[in-house]
Amino acid sequence: MLAKIINRLRNGYLVYHLGVSFKDVRFCTKVLDILWKERLIKGYTKTNEGVITVFLRYDEGLPICTRLVVLSRPRDRLYLSLLDLSRVSKDFGVLILSTPKGIMTSQEAVRKGEGGEILAYVG
Image 1 (cartoon, helix red, strand yellow):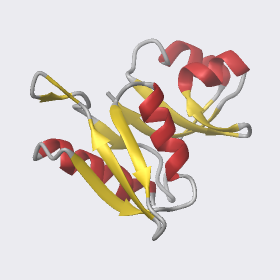
Image 2 (cartoon, helix red, strand yellow):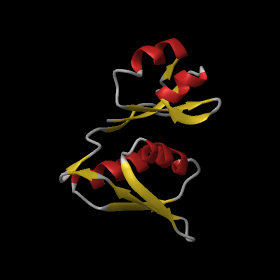
Image 3 (cartoon, one colour):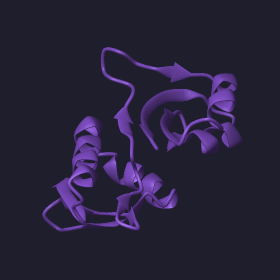
Image 4 (cartoon, one colour):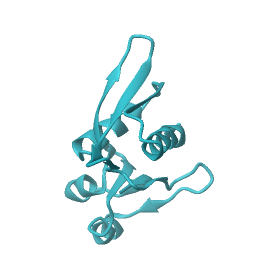
């Protein structure tokens, strides 16, 4: 389901939509909270019918997010240890990780001393 969310966001940015909508799934609000904290989206609203509308952020008419990529797939899991994360986290935009302590960015995972599965890259 993460791939569908990332695809919707990427396609919305490519055609300069102000917002995109999709059905609510288990952990999409956690991923959207991360994107909001990193100031990559304006925000999102959730309706009673289970539909989430995400408001996309632009800077002087250009999309903030130029790359949205799903890195870990069901047949190709990608894990990084704490040591690898500390080396990589400075060079990339935002890596979204799934750790034993929840879904977080790579910088949060390094601060908490956790490694985990890389879900997506946003830059």
